[in-house]
Image 1 (spheres, helix red, strand yellow):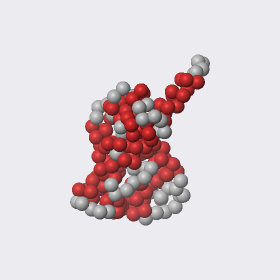
Image 2 (cartoon, helix red, strand yellow):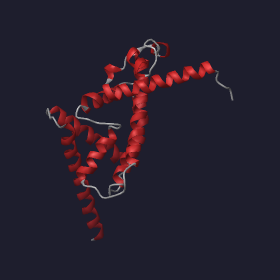
Image 3 (cartoon, one colour):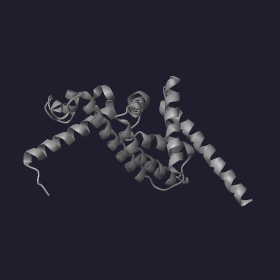
Image 4 (tube, helix red, strand yellow):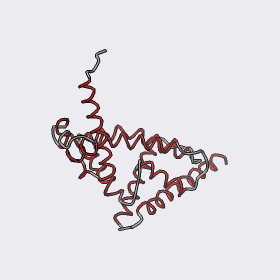
Length: 209
């Protein structure tokens, strides 16, 4: 196996630092923060260094999206795995599902800061594969939240539908001008979870009868 020279190793380390910084900026501050200078400074490198590794802004932003999704799914899985196994209320589970979906942190500006840029990335032909590749890990984390909260984990299609409900709940609360987007979306998701549990109970009673 070929051994990298010290110069090659330093170059690879700088690229990794730039990618990680770009991902953090995208998550914390949104797309407008992903600039050559901003990414380089956030990575602790000279202001002009990012332009050496990324030919244009599209390449830089693509790297930011990829890194942000890696960071999001890693944080989502870590958050889910940190949960104890115990019964939780629908509101508690709903809040956890939102927190995990938008890991590593979520606030009431989640629609403009996180959701809208993610939807834009899904519409972008170049970025769509990156978003699709991260989906299974996210769904796995959501399944862990459900099973550790006393719920039976649904299949992948139903988990994906649950993410759509989370996104819709956040978008609807934001569109109504709510000052408490997370709280309002939590109520929406909790209601859906309650309806699912009620339907499942009816099916079980029907099968038992």
